Length: 345
Figure 1 (cartoon, helix red, strand yellow):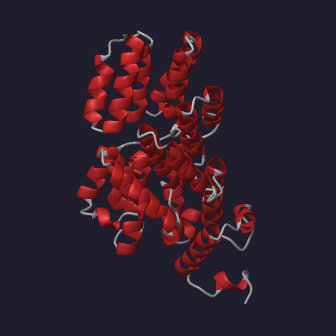
Figure 2 (tube, helix red, strand yellow):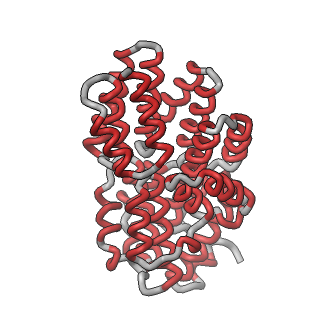
Protein backbone atom coordinates (compact mmCIF):
# COMPACT_ATOMS: atom_id res chain seq x y z
CA UNK A 1 0.00 0.00 0.00
CA UNK A 2 1.48 3.38 -0.92
CA UNK A 3 1.14 6.63 1.03
CA UNK A 4 -1.36 8.11 -1.41
CA UNK A 5 -3.81 5.25 -0.92
CA UNK A 6 -3.59 5.10 2.87
CA UNK A 7 -5.48 8.29 3.86
CA UNK A 8 -8.40 7.45 1.59
CA UNK A 9 -8.99 4.11 3.32
CA UNK A 10 -9.57 5.70 6.71
CA UNK A 11 -12.16 8.11 8.13
CA UNK A 12 -10.87 11.68 8.17
CA UNK A 13 -10.07 11.74 11.91
CA UNK A 14 -8.28 8.39 11.77
CA UNK A 15 -6.31 9.46 8.69
CA UNK A 16 -5.14 12.63 10.43
CA UNK A 17 -4.14 10.68 13.53
CA UNK A 18 -2.19 8.22 11.40
CA UNK A 19 -0.36 11.07 9.68
CA UNK A 20 0.37 12.73 13.02
CA UNK A 21 1.86 9.50 14.38
CA UNK A 22 3.98 9.19 11.23
CA UNK A 23 5.26 12.77 11.50
CA UNK A 24 6.17 12.29 15.15
CA UNK A 25 7.95 9.03 14.38
CA UNK A 26 9.99 10.68 11.64
CA UNK A 27 10.97 13.45 14.02
CA UNK A 28 11.92 11.03 16.78
CA UNK A 29 14.05 9.05 14.32
CA UNK A 30 15.80 12.20 13.09
CA UNK A 31 14.57 11.83 9.49
CA UNK A 32 14.65 15.52 8.60
CA UNK A 33 14.65 14.78 4.86
CA UNK A 34 11.24 13.12 5.10
CA UNK A 35 9.94 15.87 7.36
CA UNK A 36 11.11 18.47 4.85
CA UNK A 37 9.14 16.72 2.10
CA UNK A 38 6.00 16.69 4.25
CA UNK A 39 6.55 20.33 5.22
CA UNK A 40 6.21 21.24 1.53
CA UNK A 41 2.52 20.19 1.82
CA UNK A 42 2.36 17.53 -0.91
CA UNK A 43 -1.15 16.44 -1.99
CA UNK A 44 -1.12 13.23 0.05
CA UNK A 45 -0.53 15.03 3.36
CA UNK A 46 -2.98 17.27 5.20
CA UNK A 47 -2.32 20.94 5.85
CA UNK A 48 -2.19 20.24 9.59
CA UNK A 49 0.40 17.50 9.12
CA UNK A 50 2.57 19.73 6.94
CA UNK A 51 2.31 22.56 9.46
CA UNK A 52 3.36 20.23 12.27
CA UNK A 53 6.32 19.06 10.19
CA UNK A 54 7.41 22.68 9.82
CA UNK A 55 7.10 23.21 13.56
CA UNK A 56 9.18 20.13 14.30
CA UNK A 57 11.82 21.51 11.92
CA UNK A 58 11.68 24.76 13.95
CA UNK A 59 10.13 26.62 11.01
CA UNK A 60 7.34 28.14 13.07
CA UNK A 61 6.75 31.24 10.96
CA UNK A 62 6.30 29.06 7.89
CA UNK A 63 3.85 26.86 9.78
CA UNK A 64 1.81 29.91 10.75
CA UNK A 65 1.80 31.10 7.14
CA UNK A 66 0.62 27.71 5.85
CA UNK A 67 -2.23 27.52 8.35
CA UNK A 68 -3.27 31.10 7.57
CA UNK A 69 -3.14 30.70 3.80
CA UNK A 70 -5.02 27.40 3.62
CA UNK A 71 -7.66 26.98 6.31
CA UNK A 72 -8.98 23.64 5.04
CA UNK A 73 -7.61 22.17 8.27
CA UNK A 74 -10.59 23.69 10.08
CA UNK A 75 -13.03 21.40 8.24
CA UNK A 76 -10.92 18.40 7.14
CA UNK A 77 -11.53 16.62 10.43
CA UNK A 78 -11.96 17.38 14.11
CA UNK A 79 -8.43 16.16 14.78
CA UNK A 80 -7.07 18.46 12.06
CA UNK A 81 -8.98 21.36 13.60
CA UNK A 82 -7.52 20.59 17.03
CA UNK A 83 -3.94 20.31 15.77
CA UNK A 84 -4.18 23.32 13.47
CA UNK A 85 -5.53 25.53 16.23
CA UNK A 86 -2.97 24.31 18.75
CA UNK A 87 0.09 24.69 16.54
CA UNK A 88 -1.18 27.88 14.93
CA UNK A 89 -1.59 29.45 18.35
CA UNK A 90 1.86 28.30 19.41
CA UNK A 91 3.48 29.61 16.23
CA UNK A 92 1.97 33.04 16.81
CA UNK A 93 2.91 32.94 20.49
CA UNK A 94 6.55 32.18 19.79
CA UNK A 95 6.60 35.10 17.33
CA UNK A 96 5.42 37.48 20.05
CA UNK A 97 1.71 37.50 19.21
CA UNK A 98 0.04 35.91 22.27
CA UNK A 99 -3.62 36.86 21.66
CA UNK A 100 -4.71 33.62 20.01
CA UNK A 101 -2.91 31.44 22.54
CA UNK A 102 -4.42 33.45 25.38
CA UNK A 103 -7.93 33.15 23.99
CA UNK A 104 -7.56 29.40 23.48
CA UNK A 105 -6.27 29.04 27.03
CA UNK A 106 -9.14 31.06 28.49
CA UNK A 107 -11.87 29.39 26.41
CA UNK A 108 -10.88 25.81 27.10
CA UNK A 109 -14.46 24.59 26.86
CA UNK A 110 -14.20 25.22 23.12
CA UNK A 111 -11.20 22.96 22.59
CA UNK A 112 -11.89 20.41 19.83
CA UNK A 113 -12.26 16.86 21.14
CA UNK A 114 -12.18 18.06 24.73
CA UNK A 115 -14.60 15.30 25.71
CA UNK A 116 -12.09 12.65 24.61
CA UNK A 117 -9.71 12.21 27.54
CA UNK A 118 -6.63 11.46 25.44
CA UNK A 119 -7.05 14.59 23.32
CA UNK A 120 -7.94 16.73 26.34
CA UNK A 121 -4.83 15.54 28.16
CA UNK A 122 -2.62 16.22 25.13
CA UNK A 123 -3.94 19.76 24.88
CA UNK A 124 -3.53 20.43 28.61
CA UNK A 125 0.05 19.15 28.48
CA UNK A 126 0.83 21.34 25.47
CA UNK A 127 -0.58 24.49 27.08
CA UNK A 128 1.21 23.80 30.36
CA UNK A 129 4.46 23.27 28.45
CA UNK A 130 3.99 26.55 26.56
CA UNK A 131 3.36 28.47 29.78
CA UNK A 132 6.50 27.00 31.32
CA UNK A 133 8.53 27.92 28.22
CA UNK A 134 7.32 31.49 28.83
CA UNK A 135 8.37 31.26 32.48
CA UNK A 136 4.75 31.46 33.66
CA UNK A 137 4.93 29.04 36.57
CA UNK A 138 1.84 30.38 38.42
CA UNK A 139 -0.34 30.21 35.31
CA UNK A 140 0.85 26.68 34.55
CA UNK A 141 0.10 25.55 38.09
CA UNK A 142 -3.33 27.20 37.93
CA UNK A 143 -4.14 25.40 34.68
CA UNK A 144 -3.19 22.07 36.26
CA UNK A 145 -5.37 22.82 39.28
CA UNK A 146 -8.33 24.08 37.24
CA UNK A 147 -8.26 20.98 35.05
CA UNK A 148 -7.55 18.64 37.99
CA UNK A 149 -4.59 17.34 36.01
CA UNK A 150 -1.83 15.59 38.00
CA UNK A 151 1.77 16.72 37.60
CA UNK A 152 2.70 13.09 37.17
CA UNK A 153 0.82 13.24 33.86
CA UNK A 154 3.34 15.74 32.50
CA UNK A 155 6.51 14.85 30.62
CA UNK A 156 9.80 14.91 32.49
CA UNK A 157 10.77 18.10 30.62
CA UNK A 158 7.79 19.99 32.03
CA UNK A 159 8.30 18.56 35.50
CA UNK A 160 11.95 19.60 35.34
CA UNK A 161 11.05 23.18 34.46
CA UNK A 162 8.52 23.29 37.29
CA UNK A 163 11.12 22.00 39.74
CA UNK A 164 13.66 24.58 38.55
CA UNK A 165 11.16 27.41 38.97
CA UNK A 166 10.26 26.16 42.44
CA UNK A 167 13.86 26.22 43.62
CA UNK A 168 14.41 22.45 43.54
CA UNK A 169 17.65 22.24 41.55
CA UNK A 170 18.56 18.62 42.29
CA UNK A 171 15.12 17.42 41.22
CA UNK A 172 15.15 19.63 38.13
CA UNK A 173 18.54 18.29 37.02
CA UNK A 174 17.54 14.68 37.70
CA UNK A 175 14.33 15.06 35.66
CA UNK A 176 16.30 16.68 32.82
CA UNK A 177 18.61 13.67 32.66
CA UNK A 178 15.62 11.34 32.72
CA UNK A 179 14.04 13.29 29.88
CA UNK A 180 17.20 12.92 27.83
CA UNK A 181 17.40 9.19 28.53
CA UNK A 182 13.77 8.41 27.73
CA UNK A 183 13.41 9.25 24.05
CA UNK A 184 9.89 7.75 24.01
CA UNK A 185 8.59 10.90 25.70
CA UNK A 186 9.67 13.31 22.99
CA UNK A 187 6.89 13.61 20.42
CA UNK A 188 5.58 17.18 20.45
CA UNK A 189 7.86 18.12 23.35
CA UNK A 190 7.85 21.89 22.88
CA UNK A 191 9.53 22.44 26.24
CA UNK A 192 12.63 20.33 25.58
CA UNK A 193 15.00 23.20 24.71
CA UNK A 194 13.56 25.43 27.44
CA UNK A 195 14.17 22.67 29.97
CA UNK A 196 17.82 22.63 28.95
CA UNK A 197 18.07 26.40 29.28
CA UNK A 198 16.76 26.22 32.84
CA UNK A 199 18.88 23.18 33.74
CA UNK A 200 22.08 24.59 32.25
CA UNK A 201 21.42 27.84 34.14
CA UNK A 202 21.14 25.86 37.37
CA UNK A 203 24.37 23.96 36.69
CA UNK A 204 26.20 27.19 35.86
CA UNK A 205 24.94 28.75 39.11
CA UNK A 206 26.49 25.75 40.93
CA UNK A 207 29.79 26.14 39.09
CA UNK A 208 29.32 22.81 37.30
CA UNK A 209 30.41 24.01 33.88
CA UNK A 210 31.54 20.62 32.55
CA UNK A 211 28.18 19.06 33.41
CA UNK A 212 26.43 22.01 31.78
CA UNK A 213 28.49 21.63 28.60
CA UNK A 214 27.82 17.89 28.42
CA UNK A 215 24.07 18.34 28.86
CA UNK A 216 24.03 21.10 26.26
CA UNK A 217 25.93 19.00 23.72
CA UNK A 218 23.48 16.14 24.22
CA UNK A 219 20.54 18.49 23.75
CA UNK A 220 21.93 19.94 20.52
CA UNK A 221 22.33 16.44 19.08
CA UNK A 222 18.53 16.02 19.18
CA UNK A 223 17.79 19.11 17.03
CA UNK A 224 14.93 20.28 19.28
CA UNK A 225 12.25 22.83 18.56
CA UNK A 226 12.99 26.38 19.81
CA UNK A 227 16.68 25.63 19.38
CA UNK A 228 17.61 29.30 19.84
CA UNK A 229 17.04 28.75 23.56
CA UNK A 230 20.08 26.48 23.51
CA UNK A 231 22.12 29.43 22.21
CA UNK A 232 21.12 31.37 25.31
CA UNK A 233 22.06 28.40 27.49
CA UNK A 234 25.43 28.09 25.77
CA UNK A 235 26.02 31.82 26.18
CA UNK A 236 25.60 31.43 29.93
CA UNK A 237 28.23 28.70 29.97
CA UNK A 238 30.59 30.86 27.89
CA UNK A 239 30.01 33.87 30.12
CA UNK A 240 30.81 31.80 33.21
CA UNK A 241 33.98 30.62 31.44
CA UNK A 242 35.05 34.21 30.75
CA UNK A 243 34.36 33.99 26.99
CA UNK A 244 32.37 37.22 26.84
CA UNK A 245 32.71 37.84 23.10
CA UNK A 246 31.55 34.32 22.31
CA UNK A 247 28.66 34.74 24.75
CA UNK A 248 27.61 38.03 23.16
CA UNK A 249 27.62 36.48 19.69
CA UNK A 250 25.39 33.62 20.80
CA UNK A 251 22.98 35.98 22.53
CA UNK A 252 22.71 38.23 19.48
CA UNK A 253 22.04 35.18 17.31
CA UNK A 254 19.25 34.12 19.67
CA UNK A 255 17.43 37.42 19.18
CA UNK A 256 17.31 37.14 15.39
CA UNK A 257 14.21 34.99 14.95
CA UNK A 258 11.43 33.95 17.31
CA UNK A 259 10.53 36.26 20.18
CA UNK A 260 10.05 33.69 22.92
CA UNK A 261 12.94 33.66 25.36
CA UNK A 262 14.63 36.68 23.83
CA UNK A 263 13.92 38.69 26.98
CA UNK A 264 16.56 36.52 28.67
CA UNK A 265 19.01 37.13 25.83
CA UNK A 266 18.44 40.89 25.83
CA UNK A 267 18.85 41.11 29.60
CA UNK A 268 22.07 39.09 29.41
CA UNK A 269 23.32 41.34 26.58
CA UNK A 270 22.56 44.37 28.74
CA UNK A 271 24.53 42.76 31.57
CA UNK A 272 27.50 42.13 29.28
CA UNK A 273 27.39 45.72 28.05
CA UNK A 274 27.28 47.13 31.56
CA UNK A 275 30.26 45.01 32.60
CA UNK A 276 32.18 46.70 29.76
CA UNK A 277 30.78 50.11 30.74
CA UNK A 278 29.00 50.18 27.38
CA UNK A 279 25.87 51.97 28.48
CA UNK A 280 24.79 52.60 24.89
CA UNK A 281 24.74 48.84 24.29
CA UNK A 282 22.72 48.32 27.47
CA UNK A 283 20.26 50.99 26.35
CA UNK A 284 19.81 49.23 23.00
CA UNK A 285 19.00 46.03 24.86
CA UNK A 286 16.51 47.93 27.00
CA UNK A 287 14.86 49.37 23.89
CA UNK A 288 14.35 45.83 22.61
CA UNK A 289 12.89 44.77 25.95
CA UNK A 290 10.52 47.74 25.96
CA UNK A 291 9.29 46.77 22.50
CA UNK A 292 8.88 43.15 23.51
CA UNK A 293 6.99 44.10 26.67
CA UNK A 294 4.46 46.10 24.67
CA UNK A 295 3.67 43.06 22.51
CA UNK A 296 4.13 40.22 24.97
CA UNK A 297 3.94 41.43 28.60
CA UNK A 298 4.62 38.14 30.37
CA UNK A 299 5.99 38.23 33.89
CA UNK A 300 9.47 37.25 32.76
CA UNK A 301 9.56 39.90 30.05
CA UNK A 302 8.45 42.58 32.52
CA UNK A 303 10.93 41.40 35.15
CA UNK A 304 13.85 41.61 32.75
CA UNK A 305 12.73 45.01 31.52
CA UNK A 306 12.56 46.35 35.09
CA UNK A 307 15.91 44.74 35.88
CA UNK A 308 17.71 46.45 33.01
CA UNK A 309 15.96 49.74 33.75
CA UNK A 310 17.12 49.57 37.37
CA UNK A 311 20.68 48.58 36.44
CA UNK A 312 20.81 51.62 34.16
CA UNK A 313 19.52 53.83 36.97
CA UNK A 314 16.29 54.63 35.19
CA UNK A 315 14.09 53.45 38.07
CA UNK A 316 14.52 52.32 41.69
CA UNK A 317 15.29 48.69 42.47
CA UNK A 318 11.96 48.18 44.19
CA UNK A 319 9.78 47.35 41.19
CA UNK A 320 12.19 44.72 39.94
CA UNK A 321 12.65 43.10 43.34
CA UNK A 322 8.93 43.14 44.08
CA UNK A 323 8.14 41.42 40.80
CA UNK A 324 10.93 38.86 41.29
CA UNK A 325 9.63 38.01 44.76
CA UNK A 326 6.05 37.87 43.48
CA UNK A 327 7.08 35.36 40.79
CA UNK A 328 8.69 33.22 43.50
CA UNK A 329 11.37 31.65 41.33
CA UNK A 330 14.54 31.52 43.46
CA UNK A 331 17.16 31.43 40.68
CA UNK A 332 15.49 34.35 38.91
CA UNK A 333 15.46 36.35 42.15
CA UNK A 334 19.11 35.53 42.86
CA UNK A 335 20.21 36.67 39.38
CA UNK A 336 18.24 39.90 39.67
CA UNK A 337 19.56 40.68 43.15
CA UNK A 338 23.17 39.96 42.15
CA UNK A 339 22.98 42.24 39.12
CA UNK A 340 21.32 45.04 41.04
CA UNK A 341 24.02 44.92 43.73
CA UNK A 342 26.76 45.00 41.08
CA UNK A 343 25.41 47.92 39.08
CA UNK A 344 23.69 50.00 41.75
CA UNK A 345 26.42 49.83 44.38
